[in-house]
Image (cartoon, rainbow over all chains, first blue to last red; front, side, top):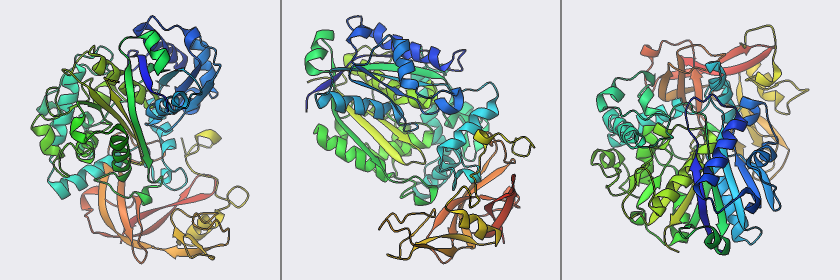
Amino acid sequence: MRKVALVAGGMGPWGVRAATLRDLIAEGAKAAFDDNKNIRPKDIEGLLLSSAFPERNCFQTHTAPLAMEIAGITASKLIGRVELLCGSGTLAIQLAYAHIAAGLSDVIMVVGAEKLYMPDKWETYYNMQAACDRDFDNIHGLGVPPPLFAMIAKMHMKKYGTTEEQMALVSVKARKNGATNPHAHFRQPVTLDEVMTSVRVVDPLKIFDCCPVTDGAAGVILASEDRAKDFTDKPVWIKAIGQASTHKNSANVPGFTSWPNLKMAAADAYRRAGIKPDDVDVAATHDCFTISEIIEYEDFGWCEKGEGGRFIEAGLADVGGKVAVNPDGGLLSCGHPFGATGVRQAQEMMHQLRGDAHNQVKDAKIALQHTLSGFVSDSTIIIYGRDE
Amino acid sequence: MMGNERYIATMDLFPQEDRDHNKLYRFYENLRDNKLTTTKCRECGTVKWPPRSVCPECMSENLEWIEIGPTGKIEIFTVEEVGVPEGFEKPLIHALVALDGYPLTIFSRIVDAAPDKLTEGMRVGLKIIEIPRDRVTFAFKPL
């Protein structure tokens, strides 16, 4: 296996955007090229587009060549779209990594783009119904998970004594971190009281416990060891990847308050990277809901099982804490355009390890990104290192 | 939208259920008989939810239908107040229902119930619901 590095990355403005899918793709690709002027479209040998809902929200399929054309690329080695709902972006980077590591290509771009906010809001929610098992879950109006995570929150509260205030603190941290991120959907800090008194969506989750409906794109460029050094003197190395999936249908969830797919994928990634949980300096985890981030502290091994609420309360997930979790604001502040999220996480981890992030974690050497997808079905993880 | 006369095929939340379109049509025919069913492999005995047209253990297509439920108890529930999808009424009650007599817990909608009257552990039974284009679906209701 050859070594592979991130050599460029960036994100466009995220929010409710006056932009089509093709506009967003252009922003994601431009952000990556703008980050490193040594790389031009002619250097790119292939492109993977990460997008979950283009057929549904944009009536567009065969989207990867569209992205390629917009980015000014001709693919000589690889072209395609990757879909794993919320995990699409992280998976696209994993596949580009594997392609380069296997020696099949040297320079691949990954663009994540998602148009999620529809002019008629009902359509956004309705289209999200496509995410669950259509014949046997969607029939109950289950859709993408606020009700699921509400029930997970209730179970975690019952089992471990986690409180609504502790969950709210995850939102307070996300908004504080997002305040310095010029691309985030929400850049206004919120107080504990504001989160606690915000509109109830699905009990016990309030609106600030949930990531918003957001349009956006991001882009990264991966290169083989030899080519990476042509482009930058600060490559960020992919040390390991891990991925696991346990189920699709809601009846087959093996765990609600602890996620076996996350634990499997993390164990694999830690082992391949040769690191322990405590070695992680900075992480982009999947804070689709505040309770998710609390469970992730636990399942990644940064604290004991059931201690996630106390982990956030003690400030251990802050920049300057034990592990800086989501220093760019995460999904709660940046928003969650499904296909773009993993690519947003990757470029943020790259900036953190290069030392030029907006909310820089001091002397970060090891970074981890994680996306969770579906009905807490799949975890897709990448570990990065500053040093070769 | 779902209740409208005009049928937009690609926006249809529910599957085609009849024998001309779906190999699992018996599931829906059984619902019409007030029975919640799934498949059991006649070769290796594997029972899975949701029902299958091919056994995921031994790849046999020789499957039979067995009844599950139709009663159970609410393990946990929540009430959705914002973002309820088109075609469903507010408040939308979601619950994990542990079925009697078969080790299966499924997410389902709870209907014919006032949210403030629901409790964990409450007994529920199968409720068949008619949906547009002469189809049926299921939920649970308090017993």
